[in-house]
Length: 321
Image 1 (cartoon, rainbow, N blue to C red):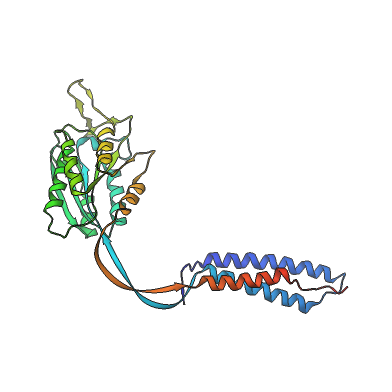
Image 2: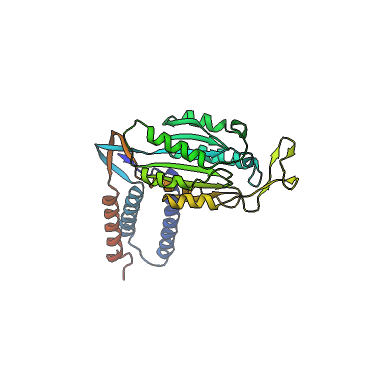
């Protein structure tokens, strides 16, 4: 027999509570017995009845499964490129310890949750580069995520169009059979100094690729550290301030039927992003046979309810009149 919910602590506490309450119940009859003649064998019968259906309730709660059979499980997978902005503004500290460190922490959890999908990593600033091609290998992905830093790419500004063009190129040149779900997770603070990216949207819609944007930062923004100093805005000769710009990120998500999400010290929407990705219908990447068993809790629950009903409608007389 297999137990679906073998929570020993819960069962133990329920048994202790039941035992204490029933001891109080028996103590009540002990006090009555001092004044009136009580039929003890009927009290014993009542106790047996109640203990029996309480045990049946506990068995039903643990979800007993009896018997096994082989069941074919089809494995669905999706192709996902994660494009991470590595411009200098990702070093801003409006999110602790800074934007990029927060992104790396969330990416590690995200890739673990999407372990059944092929995931690739694109890094970008003014240019875009493939950091990791599409792969199922979680160890490789985690290694590349650990190594993310703003020194990996040229930093003459941010061009959101560059990683989108690269992801589209890799998707369309992929020799793998066409998948039913291809997505790009675009992680950035939204600042864009590149060419107009709106022309790529038609190509994404024609290819059935969705963009899920993850905005990183706050509307208040912060300065950008660089070594022991700050990056200076040449126009004002004052420390540059970087803020989360949501317009482009929301536009891309909306136009490709994706979704926009944020992470900051106040908002944590990576779980919502993962849920949105998981809702996408993936392609069948394989199948495997697993041993399945049927949960038979209903029979134990039905028996317990039956005994409880008997206890309610047919009370045993315990006192002679």
